[in-house]
Structures are given as C-alpha cells and as structure tokens.
Length: 191
Image 1 (tube, rainbow, N blue to C red):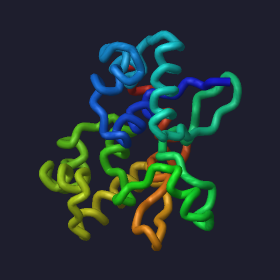
Image 2 (cartoon, rainbow, N blue to C red; image 1 turned 45 degrees about the vertical axis):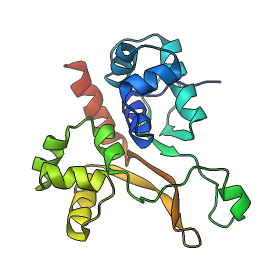
Image 3 (cartoon, helix red, strand yellow; image 1 turned 135 degrees about the vertical axis):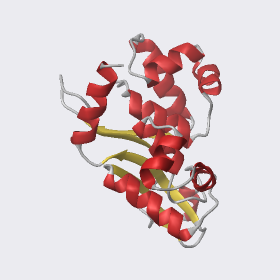
Image 4 (cartoon, helix red, strand yellow; image 1 turned 90 degrees about the vertical axis):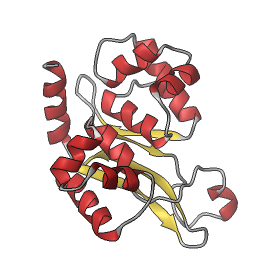
C-alpha cells in the first residue's frame, strides 16, 4: 500500500536531494504550485502527494515515521535509503546513495519549515554561517552550535559513516517525538 507523506517529510526529502520546488514538480510530473501546497499542509489531491512520494523514493529517499490508522504520523522525516547494517559488503553499499556530509542541516531546516535568517537568529549564528554549514563548509564550533540547536528543538539526525569509504549512508532528519509534530500541525492550521 502506498502511503502519503506529511508536509514536513516532503520538505525534508526535497532538501536532501537539493532540489527546487520546480525541479521536484518536473520529476513528479505535477505543478510547482502543487509541490508548494503539499509542503505547506494545504489541500492537495492524494494522488499528487503520492506522485511526490514515488518520485522521491525513486531518487533514493526513504520516508520515516510511525502511525496507526486515524492518527497523525509521529517521528516523521526523511532520509537517504541505506543498507540495514554497516557490516554489509561494499558491493551492497554501492547500491545506495552516499554523501560526504554526516549532518544535513538544510533538511533539518526544511523539516522545521524555517528560513535561514530565522535559524541564524534563534541559534545565535549569522546567515552566512548557516549558508556555509548547509553547503558543507565546516567550522567546528559553529557546526556543534547549530547541531545542538536543532537537537534541542526536537530534530533527530539519522545515518552512519563508513570508515573505509569516508561516506555516510542513511543521512536524514526526523522529529525525535510527537510533541513538535503536534505543534507544527497546530501552526499549519492557523496560516
């Protein structure tokens, strides 16, 4: 059964793939307006949401979350698909997307539906530092400060590193628990 994804997971998936809404729309064969609506919890056809999910999955995304019938998805998020264990053979690892960065700050910001300026102000950093960290330009103190800020705001980073290749698998973001998800839903209802 195909399952639709919540708005925050769709935003995180697109950020992990470093796509614009226009690029995601073209890949999912829908409109940019539909992508925007789906990412902002606005009314969209179920089929539109599933087109986005299918497109992202075809590009190596795994949607994360826990739910039961009639309930909101909790611990929602998205990650790059990965082998189940770091102990698999290299040939198996090569079938999965791998990245050079262990922490997807852009995806964390997308999960929270925040602008760079909002994150910079709240985390006590500059917009330029946020931009650099999202591009993978590391400054250890700023990196730790931003990661700690996201974690304090209920974002969990996923993934694991492979010492042999120096690459990371399963990199993504999700909510640590349902508290922020419920707040996000309430805020979305008032926009």
